[in-house]
Image 1: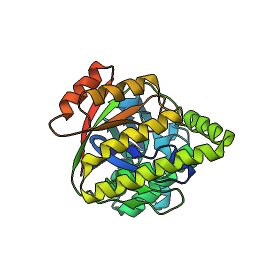
Image 2 (image 1 turned 90 degrees about the vertical axis):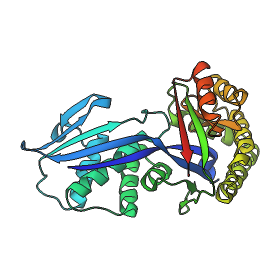
Image 3 (image 1 turned 180 degrees about the vertical axis):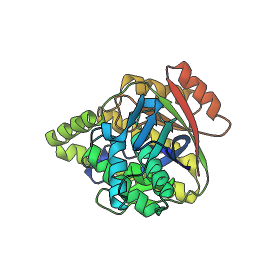
Length: 308
């Protein structure tokens, strides 16, 4: 048997502005994981069981563009494995699907590692990341690459479009509370709406994106210097700019305000917006109380995570 797991991820700063060349920061969320077990089988073929998405099927019955089938086919072909071995693959995950926490990329990374290891062809992190990025491109067209990189290396990442991504050292650990609105909103819709705003008044929105970029740059310095308590004010500023972009929502704003009232040092929406998650900067002693306040305010789920 070969077993591998991969964490979730969340955007800390820079959503939407990253599309226009400004930096973004993302972090791994180790409290949620995708896990893949690969074992040999006495039956021919490759059987995939993913109870979380109600999948139990033979590989050859899945369409070639199915996310799991794409990983398996492409990896086995790239490793020169022929004929395909008889395998049982079990996939489980505690990462909420379609919530901005990188569920798809985490499953891909865990599956790539588990399969390659079982076949006696383990891959380096660089190889896993490159392969996972190709899978992301199959399903998302032109992804930033931020999800697969944060998840592969399980390190905070600083990213600028069309530049080499950098992993960040964390000068001192810090605690975040993630609150899920329970609302699902396609990222491409909010990205499209921001694009229309930008096209209608490029001068104004370039200034807004510049402001978001400066926040991300400052946040990077603060994280590396080990002064995470200073991140709170930048989170509040970033959220206000995202509200200006019209990508927040009443539900996100309500949870952000609830976190601040419960003692968060700062809070903001995270990801595409219009639903999904928000994040709040806490201390180890205030995190549980903030999480409880978020649930009382309507959060469907909360996660407390420590970075660094």
